[in-house]
Length: 286
Ligand code: ADP
Ligand code: MG
Image (cartoon, rainbow, N blue to C red):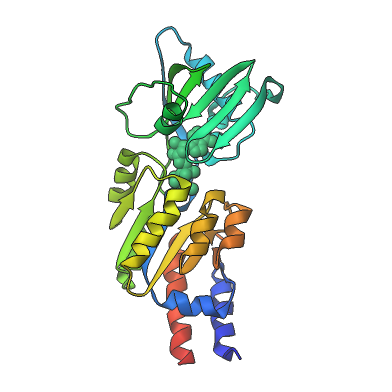
């Protein structure tokens, strides 16, 4: 049987927009000492702004953005949504077919009968295309057409309003380590980690690498590890963690499904609140 106060705890949490899928997760949450965050959409808003367009010589920047936006036509990745928002024209889906989304890499699509690739260094390397480095800090979207590099787009995301406070509150609640995982570049990860006061970060991870990395971190955790994510790719990690927490408002159905706890308003500061509710509930139960 489940002690009555568990329902009080779950009800109290739900009034704060924190949905707990079972009383056992309150117990697990009360003993969390490590919180691992996915970056994009969890600590950052997931809405990227185009910072710069760097075409190769003789390439028109509008042409570069047009091809990138069309290659992303059928993707709902936060990066794809942002590139399409930056494109002033109307996306013509009839120009696009043969789309392949390569998770943690980017997309490949046929646009106007040309093979267009949009993604990171890993995508270019995997398809034998060269690229030029970029001196700006940001997420870099390289673009190639029929294997020929035509330049890159630099985009940047902003950290959520309450992300820094969220890390501070977790530390104040006795959480020993706040860690960020991301598939993004080292320099972007370092800047976000510094800005938020995170204890640790791991960059350039493929979605599959994240499960492995969380398992390695779990080996060194005394009590419980919570993972917080929002994307389709986060589902395996949400399942693997002692406590999986999904962002509910913008999060993917797969992440919400896989999670033990869902934050309805996508605010990372609600994690410390959830831990506090969980501890109070346990104090009443025992
Ligand atoms: P995160 O770890 O920040 O949640 P993802 O694992 O979703 O990010 O993606 C990691 C990296 O893969 C991105 O930073 C980007 O370089 C590349 N990428 C993924 N999806 C796309 C896309 N649709 N278009 C371009 N690049 C992408
Ligand atoms: Mg993600």
